[in-house]
Image (tube, rainbow, N blue to C red):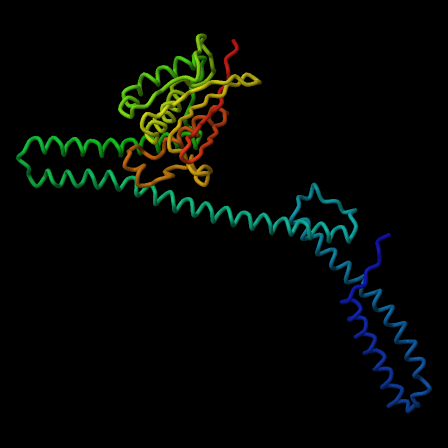
Length: 348
């Protein structure tokens, strides 16, 4: 049996009804029948008490039935009918409705916050994209207009044409990288997964970047010798792109005579962890959560001067996640950075 609860609304309504009824009887006895008050005061008092109790019970029951029916209608609209149980008690219905309304309110608030964040992200993304495109476009426009004015010195003409070509290349990098990210996000990009030797791929990347490393007086190396091939199952071209982007970043933002070291660790469940660590400038902790966002730059002025599309780490993240793997980053300013990602070993 449900615990009795005093209902203020029902009591006030019952009190008003009872007062009106008793007052009408008082007027009838006093003014029409001309009876002295002493003859009917006790009767009216007892009648007042009885009527108040009966009216309260009747109104309370009717009001509660009406309220519960409305509650159930609201409850059914919030929760699928398959999960609604008519046998639930009245107080439980109200409690469930209250919980559902709180959850609905919380979900709506969360949705509003997410929409605000998405709007802020879109605004920032469009601003960053416009800035990334504006820089090479203005470069190309400036040199082309200068050449159109007429320059007789062939050396200057050649120099300006080279600078124009660099601006066009930068635009091409940005468009290609944006197209690649769009394909990954829409599921259109496909992976050509097959077994290959990850050691050989890393050595190939070292050879490709050897000249850039020598210009920075940096060293590319393994943490130890790996005499045996280490076979993984993935898209070889995409994984080489990941390694290239990470090592290029290490060289680009490293210190003079720095060291970029690649290590491999075999984990449980047929997984391998590939680490790319350096002793470069490092990254402040506040930047780490946003490091893989498109066009996000830790040092905007310096990084734009270094070139590139600003999408390298975003592409790396998409490629790794497309393989069903994870990528991690640890860094400390003035100490260095370590990027690592997992791959599946080929045991066949």
